[in-house]
Image (cartoon, rainbow, N blue to C red; front, top):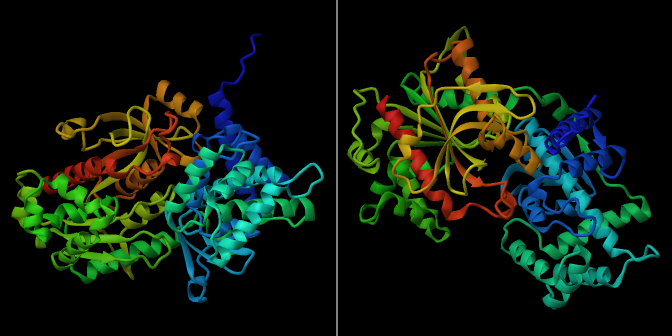
Length: 562
């Protein structure tokens, strides 16, 4: 019988499944040591997977630099200094007096308890826990490389390490030091060239809420060396409350009830409601920027205005639009539930109808006294999308009476990795397939390629993969999804979870209209099949303005058509 060897895609998929099984086991166990047996098994699975976003993770000498920056922008500042990391649910730390630390690109409340311990709140479901454990596993793998480079054959710290230690001491005292000399020695610890080290040092300096690269390298190596020489082990643990919370909708229910109570208080609950999952600026700007900016807004095309609003130097302009919006039908609901999802409510009855029609390109609409209410929720994270959307679409439980919400459409504008095009392109899904399980959710998308005929980017239509985590994807798996009969055009983390909640509430529970309209569109934040175009290569920047606002306008047109 002919023996069939597994392909790289099969090996990679097995590694992903193994990682998640190991993570679930460790969560239930309550604690583990990253360099212990369980932690080493996770590192082995991650190395076997070899994700694109972690670049040279498998290289035993070279520390992965872009991946390091990607991770530190998503972890709390100073986590590299902490020997003990504890993942917790919302357990009262917000009232403790500890100052919350929030990473630049991941909304989590984190608390530095003392010099050695960091608590990280996990309120966004299993995807959030898997995400941070993956990043920490990568971090510990790279720390071991630094530790090895810092020791000589007699297990004593070498000259490069001693030099970096002195530089870090000077940084803590605010003293000057020779950066070029420092980078030369640091390149030895990183196993990189001087040029590569200088380049990433500059990137770290530009990143906000991230420590200096000298301090990061020193503290990563310090903990690794102390564990190797002094048996002073690092440890990750999980609170019992977190273990009990996972899989339940505690935070999503609280979040959804706050929204429903607000809508009832403003007499908006029974109006036609259209839900949009998007950022907290594009809908606001499409509806109000032209009016808010007056002559500044009318002398330019809307996309030009959007570009102006996106610039860091134009904070006053953004504030002016928001101030105008809050006086003309926009309400802001800040999250108090722990989901970290802010919400905006727009009463279209209070929006300047003539100006809105002009902004949407001369589009005519007739809402016939049934002005819609637009509910914009911030981006959910992974499986959190199911929890929040499921709770939002359920009727409000007001004692003996259940009040269904008059939801007419759900609209998802998301960021995704493209497998077909380039950064800034648009993807229109026709179905979502969950990675690893094959669960699939076909649907009728009210948005089509023809809706984007005038946009100056590529538009693709087809199946999309809902992945377990963007940091777990590698070239072989992605190529398989793209080239096989799945013919996937892109990958994202929430689509199938949203659709599962929509179908459960419209087709099974009948909580909302069975004929509820659904609109999905994604703009490409990266292309993980192209080296140098992964998420670790940097943010989308101005390339994202045109697709973001074009999608927003098409969603609003669909809503106003009824």
